[in-house]
Image (tube, rainbow, N blue to C red):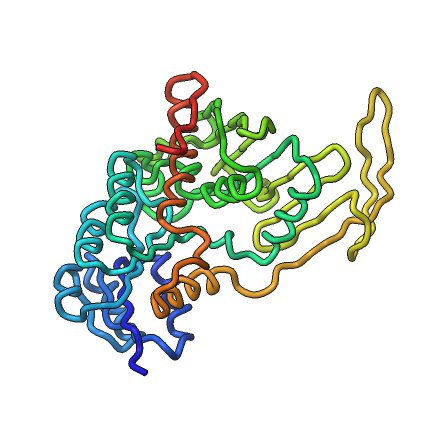
Length: 349
């Protein structure tokens, strides 16, 4: 059987992430790679043994791909997607899918009209522990969620400019925000505050160095989202989601583990002190600890590729249309930071 032809647009860091996956696959052909920087495209092409291009229309004309991975910065979306849809090429679009709602909502609508198979780079949807968190949510009424992602400033030059990246919440923490939607359901209202007082002396840096958001979900549950890029080293960083019920708690550590407290069983015994009334209660229960299985990023890519091969996109967990909702969530937080007011999240725009 003839191999399906795959193309890549964008040969930067995230393009590299996907290329490393493709090079392990024997049933696809990397037909072409494209980047506005010719040397980057050429470096990919040498590894993939395919032609390099600096204009994606030229690549489309030359190789006629069966699918494309669009791995471009947030501010570059638009023309590439419209041309891809016009040519009816199934597309995997890296997150966030854009910064301007009018633009990505129009792309979403054109995808619907064309009936295209699409996917996005929200690979945590494919983490094996998601099933355990969904089971936890089904068995316990989650009343609160705490999300924290703190790290440093990425090396990518455009990242530190809010107009180009959207800021940390939109460009990075969208992974965890998408996870919150996946487990908690849709948000209703957000109220966010941002800081610009921690990081000093970084030329061109205008994104929030720290932001905190209060979320009310449609279920009535409350949540917080804390994200910052001020950390100087790992001792100052954190990356965790907590889902709390009255009788149990689940902690999710990205790419590491899920720990469920209050359910019994598991690998480790945990002794936590939690406040109850004006005294303290010692938690003697075991924490059931679950480690992830497999490479969720590879599975994310592979699921899209197999969907194109079969014509069946039902196993894709984050199609373009759903990825749009996570961007709308994060942009509502940005709007709240800008206005100083709570914002209704128009997730169904």
